[in-house]
Image (tube, rainbow, N blue to C red; front, side, top):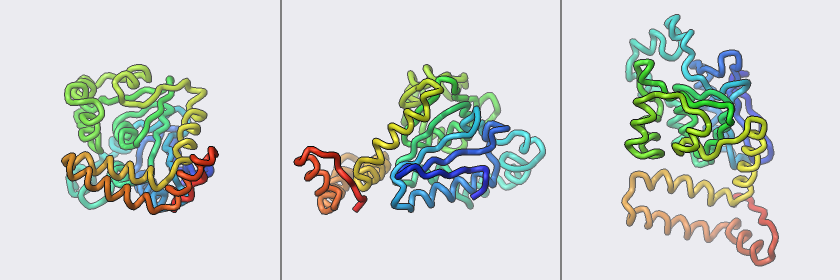
Length: 265
């Protein structure tokens, strides 16, 4: 753990904060490596039922550190340019980890999300956005493409034509426009963002964690399965969940008209 990624547990909710506020949390190689390891460790921690990803200060994540790149350092620097695709084929990146995880992740977009930062937000399962924040899909204006998941996520989230509109025009999007496109679940007043994120996270963490994780797993697999094959996997999952203590607790608490107390077993 470094001070570039902060970790705070609030009950069953783990908050991860990108912490380079002086550069709006621009990404460095060390920061990426730390975040990747923390995400994997959080997914393996049975006490963590929801992860919130946000940024310190005025930014969520402004993307690659362009000043580093201009000096030939860091991501986008000379080493990456000469290394080519080998760089990405030999190390995991955070958006790949996010796609593999079963723990739900909420992006609390408190400020600018640009470039890699936008891809990072798109890799989260839910996105709540401050009305003071902006999304900047200006890849084409920089002579690049969404390099870390955006080309996969955008058509699935928006449909083909809208994905082309957002990525090829490259216009900066405020919270209202982002919500209108469906890029974020909800736009929230800046001073209410943390409260709203906390409410969503606590509500999810209060539900049966095995069921939540299985939902996310099946959503992921369903993207590449035909309906009949997927239905078969769903049936097997349901039969396993019927055997869980959480299912018995859910049924019993409903009958007793009380809130359930799920243990993740």
